[in-house]
Amino acid sequence: MNRRRYIAAIVLCVYIAAVAVLCFIRQDNAPSVNFTFLGIASDKIAHFLMFLPFTPIAYAAFRPDSRRIMPHLLVLLAVMMAGAGLAAGTERIQAALEYRSGDIMDFAADMAGMAAGCIFTVIHIIRTDRK
Image (tube, rainbow, N blue to C red):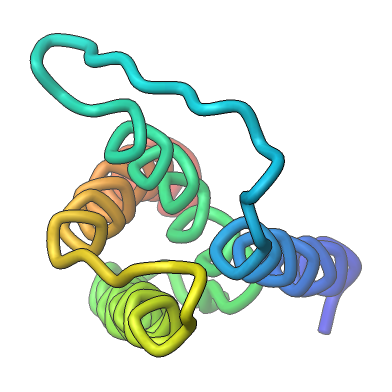
C-alpha cells in the first residue's frame, strides 16, 4: 500500500468513526436547529453533507492502479454499495435506539450525498487518473 492509500485508509476510518458519533450521540442538550433551505429540512442537508465525502475518501483508499476505466468503475460501484450499507446500518441502529429515530428520508439524503461525491470522483478520474 503506497503512502497516499495508507493516509486515505486512516482518514476513512476516522471519517466512519465521526459519522458513527454524529449518528448515535445523545442530543438531549444540543440546541435545536430547525430551518429549511430551498424547502429542504436542515437535518436532511446535514445528512447529505455528512455522506458527501464518503465516496471520494473511500475511492482514494481503494483506487486501482490501472489506467483502464473499468477497474475504477468497479471500485466506485463497490464503494457505493458499502456506503449504502453504512447509511442503511446507521438508520437501522438509530431506529433501534430509544433516544434516536430512523428515517427513510435521512437514508435518501445520505444516498444523494454519496451520489454527489461519486460524480465529483468520476470527474476527478476523468481529469487526472487516466492521463
